[in-house]
Amino acid sequence: MKMLINVPETVVSDALRGLAAAHPELTVDVQNRLVVRRDAPVADKVGVVSGGGSGHEPLHGGYVGMGMLDAACPGEVFTSPVPDQMARATAAVHSGAGVLHIVKNYTGDVLNFKLAAELAEDEGIDVRQVLVDDDVAVTDSTHTAGRRGTGATLFVEKVAGALAEAGAPLDRVAATARKVNECSRSFGVALSACTTPAKGSPTFDLPPGELELGVGIHGEPGRERRGMMTAQEIADVALDAILEDLPPGGPVLLLVNGMGGTPLLELYGFSSHVQRILGQRHVGVARTLVGNYVTSLDMAGASVTLCRADEELLRLWDAPVRTPGLRWGC
Amino acid sequence: MEAVLDAAFFRRWLTRVTAVVEREATALTELDSAIGDADHGSNMRRGFDAASAAVDSEPPDTPGGVLTAVGRQLISKVGGASGPLYGTALRRAGRALGGEPRVSAEQLRDALGAAVDGVRDLGGAAVGDKTMLDALVPAVEAYGAALERGADLAGALDAAAAAARDGAEATIGLRARKGRASYLGERSVGHQDPGATSTSLLVAALADTAREAS
Image 1: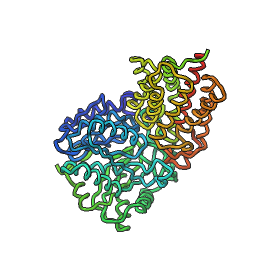
Image 2: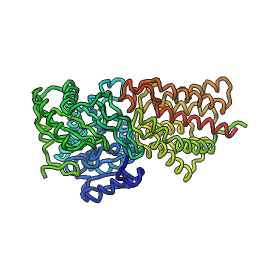
Image 3: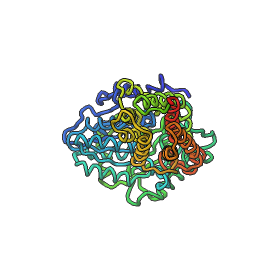
Image 4: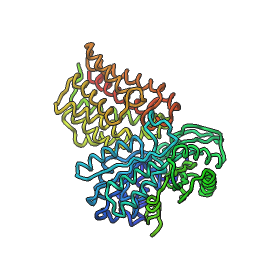
């Protein structure tokens, strides 16, 4: 597989140098693998930190900035960062108001953030953790590592960031972040496997006439393989899985997310089917976001995330945000 | 001559493991791409390269010191699940060996037991979940049983290596219940677990180090 890289070993560092050059409003520590708001720590503000393997860009480094994350720690491709990175990020954004860790539910991320929280607490920093586990494709949470964190991570980071920016205390930021996760559900499909730089070839074999339903964001195979379906049929399957599990309530935030290798033309078309089906099922869509936000390298495919949103969540969603990957209201 | 379990022994083990991981990295990554995310080989290589460099630059003078240093490097350099799990296993083993310059075969047994406890505490997995524990637990049991029967260190470690290899191979028939492979459900059956496989390599390297010395 051809890639726009020099060598696999430096892809993450090279990308961080590029991010630094393009975004002087961020402090990028290439050596220690940290992306931090230039004005951190912001006085009296709860720090919001996330991190995870690289390959999901713009997640997480692209969401560092006013109104969202204070810092992100990128790991190797699809590999959780290490506790030292997370602890350093936590110290860099700690103003005295405590720090929230937003962690996607993967064994590696959970273990490393757990060790990092212990390190930070040894330094006297008050840390809370919110686990994102929105992927309904994982139906058997008892006999697995639990539901994966996917598209809802964007919602959690945006809402927690907005609330922290507004000056809310740590416990409230953490509680609201948890609420966003509890109100969110996602389902993803892959039309192709992705190719990690280290391996150089697709992570699994997906024949031309088939697709994979219920994939995560790490190029891992999903739960079921079927013959190729139309966008409308895929939207039906995804929404069946999501709506069966989504708590009832008011309108939703909708994310139609590209996995990295599907053109926006297709994503918007797919989104039209999603919107229409939601209309038929009397689910009101309050806000829609279409694009590549939580990606899986060059994988073709998409995921749908819905979040039941009350007035407060919508207000926080609409609050100004200025990051490389998400920007409005300012 | 019976191998002596001193700092030099564990440094030789580290050198051997680093070379084995280098040689097997592609194979480990292949196993991981079938049921995981295709990075186990490169992660292990990065971790043991860093551990070797750290131990070479400041060589600890006790077995416990070597294992603790390796564990610390794995935690701070690897990431993923394997970094914290292997790192915690080795740090616990190192702590169990304490500050003695030479340890006995029985002390090694207790240290291996501490490593198992560390992995269980942090990861929450049990035998049969298709994880590194499926190689580590039988290895530690076989080692203890061989010592009971009066085997010497090399003999007991050979028994441990065989049990680890068998345990790793037996993961082929298991359905994963922890880690990323668990998301595949029944589709994880039929593939050997990468973590159990790397564990069997680490144990085999212990046996080889002992045989080389005796």
